[in-house]
Each structure stands twice: as structure tokens, then as C-alpha cells.
Amino acid sequence: MTAQASLPSLVDPGRLTLGCVDLDAPPLFSRADARGRRDGYEPAAAAAVAARLGLEVAWSFLAWSDFYPALENGRVDAIWCGQGMSDERRARADFTRPYAVFDESVVVRADDPASTPADLRGRRIGAIAGSTNMRLAETFPDVELVSFAGTADVFADMIRALRAGEVDGFVDDDVVMVPLDAEPDMRLAFTLPTRNRWGVAVRKGDDPLREALDEALAGAIDDGALEAAWSRWMPWLAFPLPAA
Image (cartoon, rainbow, N blue to C red):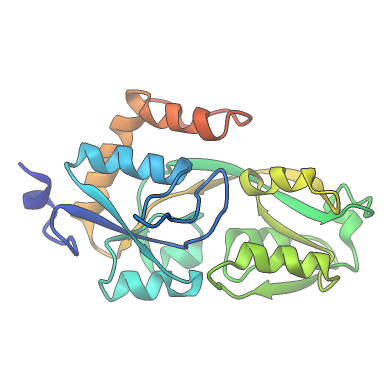
């Protein structure tokens, strides 16, 4: 059975059309070049999974806030772009098994000695609206939460806000926060072992695509392809997905 025959819901037969942002967020992904090619763990993982389905990956670049509208109205087959599987997102989409698991970190300005959530009392702490990171920030005692809209480059928006003093820190997954510790004006305050699971979002009820992606993900884990991509792009983090 061919991928095209088993996956009739594809936007473009023969291609897996995936929604994501077009920005530099190493080691997860780079901005697309003139030919639409991207580097990083997520493009490598998506390509490995799509190849097992006999499909090519086609990236459709969206603002963060347009991810689920684009999925719901059929402009993309799936969202493959750092989607922690929160209850809010599960209300709008179905998810595959995880292709990544991360902890969550807080970055502050370099002169801020905070090292625990309690140290942030009275501070303005930012996170992306509706994200698993915001859900974590909501557990910090006596902080003022600052919600960032899902613009095309919301990560840069949070960095700019921190540097401008509009927030005192922000929350995101450790994979993108660890590199900020090398910036002279920022510091990685702490990381919490939240084990935030990232999955591929598909339209509600699109079981054929979800099941096909799950099977392909399992194959890419079992034969070591996903771990090889992880080790290339994130060698400082242990691969978190055991083989079946």
C-alpha cells in the first residue's frame, strides 16, 4: 500500500505539508534558505519520518498564532514545530507519540541572582500565550505573568523584552534556552525537570495520518535514525525516547 493510497487526506499527494515558523532557533531549526531547505533537529526528524511513508516534506511557514487555524482549515497536513502536548492544544488537534522530550528553563538578566521559582516573587515573567511554558509559569509563586502573542518570531520578542526591562525573565524549553547562557547580558537561572513532550499535531479525527506518523516515528526510533539526528544537533542532551 503506497503512502498516497493510505493517506488520502494529504493536502498535496506525495508530500507531507508541515506548518512551522520560519526563524532561526538552533539547534531545533534554521531559517529556510532560498530553496526552502532548513537545518536542525526538527527538519531532520521530519525528513526521516516522511521518508518512511514515501513522502517528501514541504514546509508551510506560519505565525505561531496561525498554526491551528491552518491545520483546521486544511492548509497543512500537520504542525511540526515545537508543540508541547498541552490540554489546550489537544482540544484543537490530535497528537502523535512524542518525537522529543525537554525540560523547561527560565532565563533572566545576567545581574539577576534568581535560582529557584521562589526567587522570582514580585517579578514579571513572560511565556508564549497558551503554551506549556505559560502553564509552568502560572505555578510560580507571586509573579506577574506577561503573555506573548504567537508572532512569527515570538522567541526573539521575549529576548528583546528581557533586554529592554519589560520582563524580568521568561520561560521556554531548555533546548533553546541553554545557548542563551552564553550571552553576556543573560543568564540561565534554573531548569525544572518537567519532561515536556513534543508531538506532531494533526487534524482532529485524522486517524490514518496520525497512525501512519506514529508507525514511522516508531521505526525511526527503533532503527536509530531519530537518535542520530538528536545526537548531531543536541549532543549535550541525552536522547529521551527508548526503542519499543
